[in-house]
Structures are given as C-alpha cells and as structure tokens.
Length: 368
Image 1: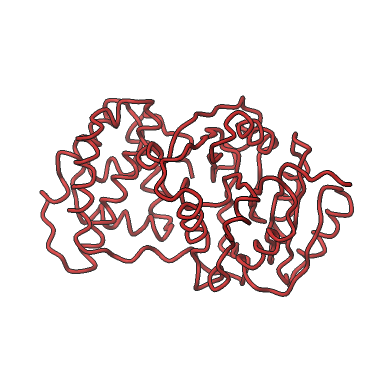
Image 2 (image 1 turned 120 degrees about the vertical axis):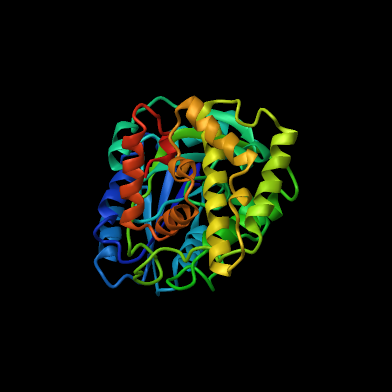
C-alpha cells in the first residue's frame, strides 16, 4: 500500500501561464520530500493546463485535476477532496514557496504538535531571495497574543500561510464557499478561516506556532483570481459608524489590562502599532464617508500618542507614523484611501516617509 504523504500542497490554477512556471519551480525545489502537489486546472483557456500536465509528467509527487471553471473556492475544494496528506497547504498559482518552506513548517509542527502553524510572507522578491536559506526562526504563541501583536488579516484571514490538519477539516465538514471566490464576489479566505476558528477552536485561546521567516512570496498580480480574469483587488471594507470611539475604547482597555503591551520585542510590538494606526485611519475615513463629525480629540488621543511615542523611541518604521505625527486628518484619510486602492501614491509617500526617517528599521513582515 502506498504511504500517504505528510503534506498535500493544493494549487488552484486559472489563466496563470505567465507566473505558473515560477510557482512550480518553487514546489520542485523543496528540500522536504514527504509531500504531494495537487494542481487543479480550473478550466483555464490559456496554456496553464498543459503546463500542469508537463510538470506532473516530470515530477512524481505531482498530479493534475482538470475541471470546468468554477472559481477558486471550487478548485480548492477539489484539491481537498483529492488530498491524502496529514496536513494541507494552499499555494496560489502566481506565488512561490521558499525552498525550505515545507521543511520548516513540518519541523515546527513536529515540535509544536498541538499548535496551528503559520508563517510570514513578503511581496518583495529581493527580500524573498535573500531569506531563502535563512535559519529557522519561530516562536510559540497563542490566539490572544497574536490578536494584539500581529497583522490580524495575515494570521486569522489568509489561508496560504498555514498548515491545516486534513482530518480536522474533514471531521468538521470545512470547505470553501463556492458562492464566493470569483471576481465581484471575493472573501472566500476570510469566510473559511472564520468557520475554521469557530468550529475547531470555539472560544478557545489556542496555541499558535509563528514562523518568522518569510516562507511565501505573494505576487501582486492584477489578474490572479482563479475564477475569472480580475481587474482589481478585493473591495475595501465598507465604512463603519462611530468606529474611532469604539477603537479607542478597545485599546484603552487593552493597555489597562496589559500595560506592557508594547514592551516586548520591538518588531512584534510594531505590528500592534501598525494595526491600531491603520484601523484609526479607517475610522477617520469612515466618518468622512458617513458624514459624521470628527474632531481632532477623537483621534489625537493618549492611546494614539502612546503608539507614536513607541515608534519614535524604538526607531521602528510604521507607514502611518508620519501621517499621524503631521496631524492632518485630511491627509490621513487620503493616505488610507490610497492604501486600500493600492495606489502608486501610497507607495510613493511610503518611500518618502522612509527617506525622512533615516535609520528607522522596518519589520520584514511590513515590506511590500
């Protein structure tokens, strides 16, 4: 009887012929051998299907599923049905894994068998290349700690930076919602992760194993949606009423309960600062969109000054530091709008801010 692999790497593929070779090369180049790669050709009209077949013909660990186009959710579900591994890893067809990604993930999972393993990523190809052979760095942490010390979206929304126990997914009947996962109806990752956390860890402060190496290269591809050719990114979150006041109350409570919230490792604490400042910018943007009155005292608060003072003392670069330090609500709202739309102006000003703060260090996880 054929032995099941430890990891099943599931790759949904649609119209990815340009980037797919780099993705497949990263799979072929893994230093860890106990895995299978399931390529799901989701009815690609380009050469993607042929590239999948060619790869599988020369790589024994790979197999291909050809199916009618149904979207990224449908493609991932087909991969889940076919998977034989103990763990599942999702890889998008235009992204890449570092050569030691599976090796490091498997090693950490073995050392922390009760934890959900997740790892950092980068959009910077140069940083990804430099970090490919970096020694493993990881920490044991928890849901409660990561909710305040990391990028919430990265930890609790993204599915492409984790090892999922396959038997757990099947036991809880977890799959991707096929009514979303295509242009105009995105958000399948968020819904999957919400259901995963609700069913597998309901109300629990469960353990996490955080691999600090950027093991995943996320390629900014404007046509990366598996279901159909896509011309833009996910829709931004809709404006929320009274958001600044609720955010202020939340973080006042956090600082009351954990006054040392920013006293740990500076780069980890900087994640908390980034989440707060960007969320506050969202609140200011929301108030403007909803026509709510917003005075300076509503956002220039003791909590905000605590966050800004942390950046100054530690000389840690956070993109929203200077917009808030400069104190223009109009510019903060504009900067946030550029951010959510991935406008070139956001990146231009981000670079300008870094030049204006020489010697300030940027956490690797922040780099685009």
